[in-house]
Image 1 (tube, each protein chain N blue to C red):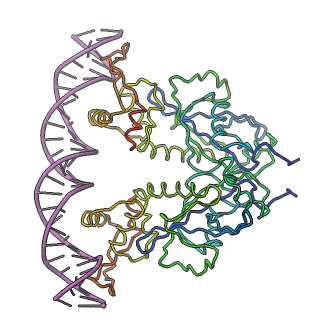
Image 2 (image 1 turned 30 degrees about the vertical axis):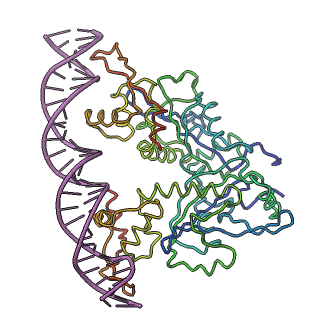
Image 3 (image 1 turned 60 degrees about the vertical axis):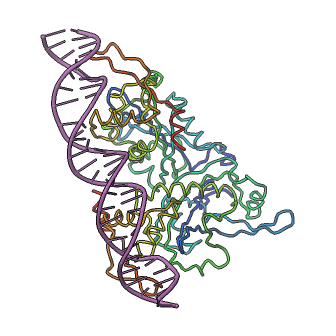
Length: 237
Length: 237
DNA sequence: ACAAAAGTGTTCGCCTTACACCCATGA
DNA sequence: TCATGGGTGTAAGGCGAACACTTTTGT
């Protein structure tokens, strides 16, 4: 029965998918219904799956993003391995879910990935009723150790945003500087001075004006900017 | 045959153990003898092992450090997962090594750890003839993808040394500021101005004088300093 | 006495921070 | 015309970089 499994039985990946819209940082969670003490419960979990026997973990993550979130070609990065012995059985409810789904393995080590999607151009209708975006500050307890994985992902994101051009992965291709500032503020949970922020951002050669304005807003039309990846690559030398 | 294995067949950890002495950054490698084309070859690899079925990866790393390097209570950190499909078979010689050692699994995902040891108080005689310290700039090709793992570990170390008090893990408890400066210089492959370096270091409350000098050197006796972990912890608030 | 590394201050430029008012647009 | 967010400049302080000579110790 155990001969030639098509997945690695004890290894999985889980994806913390971050999105940004309307001034809020969000995370995509999948809904799981479970019966516990004869009552139906709704549990939330991170998208994830076992690693195929002949699959790189990055490819597993790419597959999960596509199959479970309908997201393709988005930023993605592994950030930490979680291997606590009790990570799947911290609560009795979790153990029931494993049995219900016919999973035999009690020991699964998982690689945490985080990814960033442009929610503005994301079709959330594909998620149907099985997944939903949650405000990052409004996530309750999750199944297994997924809340811990989420917390660690956020810590890593807060750190990485200073080293890599991640903010642009969360915004439309054309964005205003106020939107960009807001992304930083929401992720880092701070406030910045508008003038100082703009001066610093515009000192980077890779943030360029689209020479367009965003009309239709009930105030002065803001200028649109874009991230120039080629220019950015040059700064890495 | 495959029932109840005591290790996870497709998961291992590998340790990049860094040490510092005499102005050089070193790495501990294990020697493997292998017959190839009817000639004996010496191959070098990173210490590593499979993860036990009921073992956290951090405990696997701790075990490997003790069993394969005789090192206990040293700094250790997971930094990246390596899962390329061909990582164990990049060269024919590597494949022979796997067969020789009777390993059945061709697919092994490995978690890379790096660790830091105080070479000054390390008993290298325990390594016998199976392992040796190599200057980081003097490491040739390694078995499997171990050279890549080493390179990534060094990149991570260079980054982490700005965020965490890692330099002290490589030095004796009592050290001179010149030694400390040299650790930074060797790891980051740069030179610093002595006065600027000292001013910056001493502005940290957690670098404290031992009120002792190091005599026996053929020049002015330098003052000894130590890292105060409690003071450091306070700075984290 | 000599060699070798320890130890020590000042200046300059840049980057960060703090701070307040007028402007363009849609309603 | 009003409400809303867009857009702009300047001054002060802190931080990092550059730079050279005297001191102490062992040989």
